[in-house]
Length: 189
Image 1 (cartoon, rainbow, N blue to C red):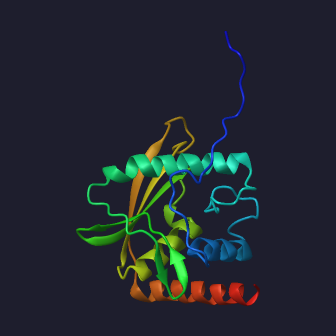
Image 2 (cartoon, helix red, strand yellow):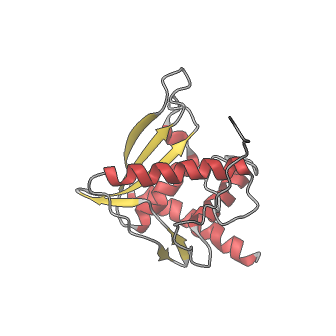
């Protein structure tokens, strides 16, 4: 006999390392993405601050699914090393991982987006990967994305590995854009 049902309550803070105070690359990326129209203010698919207690339950649930995927999948990337939080030019960043043969940045995503869309069109993902590559001094990056709905044609979850080699000048241009926006954000504090 069912005695009752209610939404499960949990906190995204559990088990996660505290973020350093200060400006984080994810906040700068979100600011730029909102300005250029890549994101809308209520977009739940992109990086949100897990410490924000006012997030809608749907955003918290999506982030929890992504954290669970990263915790389960990450150890299966054989030579994945978690570098932890870095501070570069006064900005904090936390890459999901790096790998050493060859040296590259690895980002792990869990998404409701369609796998049929060209991954290089995901501006926030690509810009984040480029920033991390620049800061870790490599031109190689990988996005390990699990498309939980596949291509939305009934195939179910589809994990994919997308490999990239960036040009040094494009990494430098992205970093300049991030630094400019960070400077603007700081001046408005």
